[in-house]
Length: 327
Length: 92
View 1: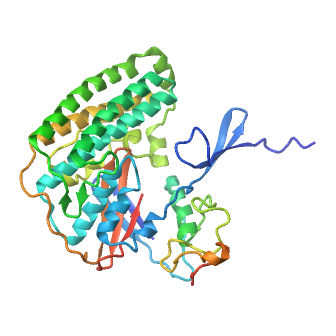
View 2 (view 1 turned 120 degrees about the vertical axis):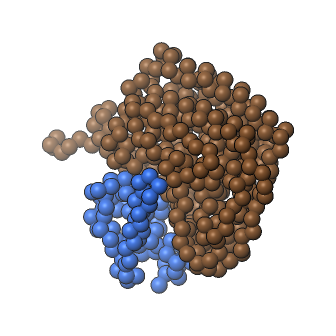
View 3 (view 1 turned 45 degrees about the vertical axis):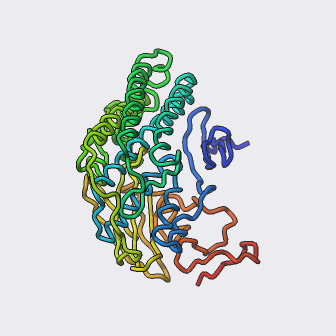
């Protein structure tokens, strides 16, 4: 019997597993209860979108890329549209940019509520899960009222946006935001006061600023580990030049901090939405964009609800044949 | 291969040109450990050899993907349907 070999037991999880939201394969090497290593395999739902953009025209790509993500679809379309507009050297009217920004923030609200619900569910707090998702419906309804769709809003066109906002709709959104703000204030109180829940979040899953940096963490998770990094304020795009974002961050780096950062970001989104609605610029919604986009390369960065979105777009100067990479 | 480095609003892009026949770049994982996923993707999707990268396993493609076929190269037009995906497509 040879016992000298290092003991290594591998627990495979996935590709299909009830705890996984989407297929993925993880192999954890464990020594007793301590995880000593992990490896991942992805791509079970790889759809070849990057390759697909090469044979579609610029307008088709807008809708294809929107389907990369079901939760942050508008962010993908915005990143792409901003990039292509830069290549085409057109200036999008301020009203269109403001509406884009408005929907960016509304999307962030629904994404953060989704996260809040799921995170509460994983922590065994199913009441909060149900409440958060009920409230999420409010913002989904408003998004549907504004754009006609609950998930893939198809709000953007190259050179502007498709839908306008009228005073009645603005009031409906204001009322919705008032309701959500009150709920959000309550949730912040719950997650920072409930003893049982704090037992599962305080000092749990600690990630230092150095570790976050090493792992390349972005978005709210990085901001909960002390990083003050947000594309919305670092390199403002769309309407964010006019509507300044206060970056929320927290030094603690544990689960409680990640809850706090996301919930405070919700409050920040409410503030921004009110600001945008009150100071909505008037004017056109679209500007004409040529069918053939001039040859060139462009980088487009957008802060998605769950972290930075980075697009690299190359044009060969034809009406199709984009070359898009996103991370 | 393009490397983008971001700090605040600034993005620096480092462009490394490779030969089509024997593309290879050194790994940056010692400096930026989180680059490992992208280096694995480079290896399998574009067939670029990343020298010294810690993990060379398939990340996205299935285990039975034919050897030497890189789906994100411009020359790739799809696998040959008749051979059941066992042979290289139009890869040159």
